[in-house]
Length: 335
Image (cartoon, rainbow, N blue to C red; front, side):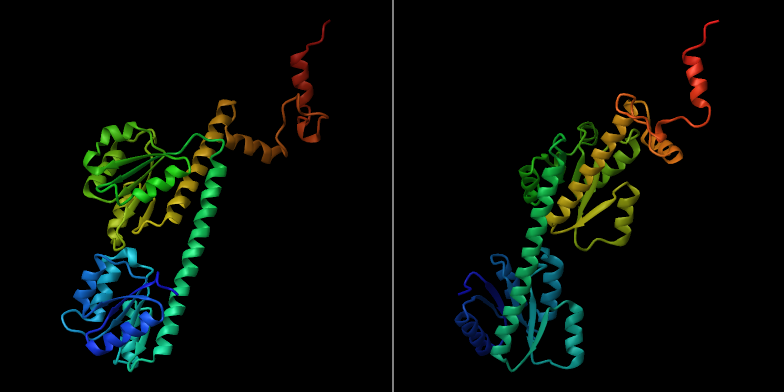
C-alpha cells in the first residue's frame, strides 16, 4: 500500500474524474479531486500533493495556466511531478507542454496501466533525488562539525520579514553548533547590525535589507562586515542580481533555500575564517605567509628553527660566503 502518497487529480469531465479517482484509490493512493485550475489552487491551500495529474482543456483556468501558476507561485512544489492528461496529442501540443515544464504528457483515452506505471516511475525518481539530497546534506553536516572542532562557533544572522520562513535554516544551523540570531527586518538597524560582528548573514531580500547593504558598502572600511548571502525569489531578474553584486553580495540562493546549499556556504565561510586565522598567526610570528612561500621558492625548503633542524640540511645552509660573514660578525676574532 502507498496510501501516504497524495495525488491531486484535476479533470473537468465528471465521469472521467470519477474513473480516475477510483483507479488511483484502488492502486493505493490518496486522491484529491478538482474540476478545474481554480479548484486545484483552492485544494493546494490545505494539501501538499506528491504528484499532480491534470487535464489541459478546462473551463475558467486550463491546465497550462495552472502549471504556470504552480511553477511560479508554489516553489515548495518544485520537485512535485506535474503530468498532463489530454486528448490534444499532436506533436506541437506535446512540445508546447514540455516547454511549459510539464514532466509527462499522457493522452486520452486513458490507458490505465500506462498511467499507473508512469506515476510509479515519476514518484520513484523523486524518491531517489530526495534520498540523494538527504545523504549529501548529512555528509556536509559531518564535514562542518569535523572542521569546526578546533574553532569557536560560527556566528550567523538570519534576517527575514517573517522569521518563520527561515526557521528550518535557523534550527539546522543551531543543531550543528552555530550561534544563530534570527532578526526580523522590522527590527533591523544598520548601525547595531554592523556592531555585532557576525561571520555570515543569510538575508531574505527586501527593501530594508537593500538599504542595509548600501549602508555597509559606505561604512565598512575595515572589512569587518559579515559575508552576506542573499535569499531571493525563484524569479529574480538579472539586473537585480547585478545590483546585489555591486553592493558586495557574492552568493544568492533561490527559494526554497535548500539546506544543502546553505551548508555549502557555511563550510566555505568556515574555511575562509580558518585561512584568515592561519595568516594572522604567521604575521604575528613575524613573517607574512607570502614572504615565507617566496623564500621557500627561492632557496628550496624554508629553514626550520635551529632546535628542530638537526642535522642541518643543504636547504638550511646559507648560500656562498654569507655564512662566514654572519659568523664573523657574531664572533669577532681577538687580536
